[in-house]
Image (tube, rainbow, N blue to C red):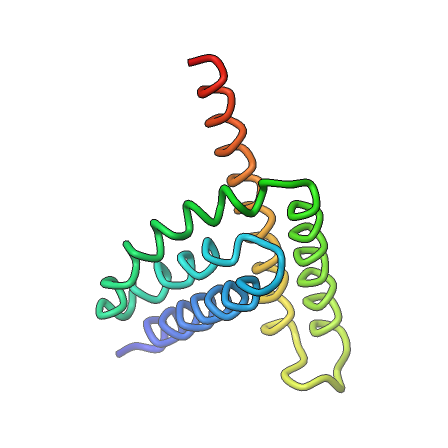
Length: 138
């Protein structure tokens, strides 16, 4: 296995792991946790095919959770706060040298997680809004 392939595999494992861990954390915090768990599983399944059997059941539950995550202004606000906290943590971990695992590798993973959270939140909101408009007009 060449160095490039090893680096790619490590990057995939780290990115998938971060998405999975943040998703699990967001299962108990406000936010589209199952969508991040699903994203983490999809990333990890690209390197570990044995994980593919978990993708469909999580996908079904994630779609329902996506709708629930934007069902009220309070939930949306909580998700935004969680995303901002991830972004701030990423900046802090990237710049403060005395923290455990400090550096931009950890910081950028946290920042990427916040970007993904915001993207999924926006996607969830648009999906629910479109469904409601379709139901209202249809």
